[in-house]
Length: 128
Image 1 (cartoon, helix red, strand yellow):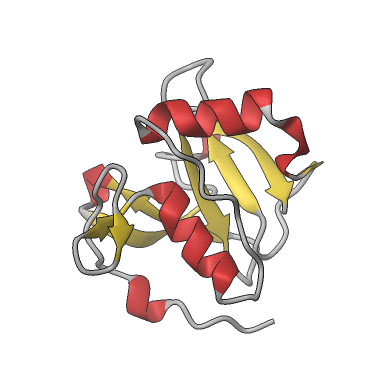
Image 2 (image 1 turned 45 degrees about the horizontal axis):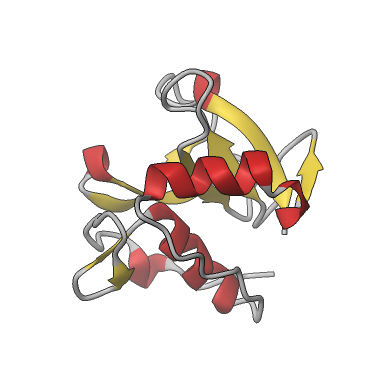
């Protein structure tokens, strides 16, 4: 499936951000990408993105099917702080890159899963 997402690149990161004008967080970006595929990710009420991601992928194991390897348009979960799942991205068509909203990158960007910045932080892949 070819998905158009280039218009999302450069949107600012905003914790708890909900729209492209003011900014997106990593969960809301994933929601938008899945919406474009005709799939709905739950819209959790959350006090902060970090606790939301950990809660979803530790306490709500039924959010998706855990995968051994990435596949196009699965969610990749990261442990930015050891032992705490706090960030997600969406794996792209090639299975080697992911799109995410990241404060340190200035917003929505595409990076490689095997980059030194991310390879050791991967906590799992999930098909929704």
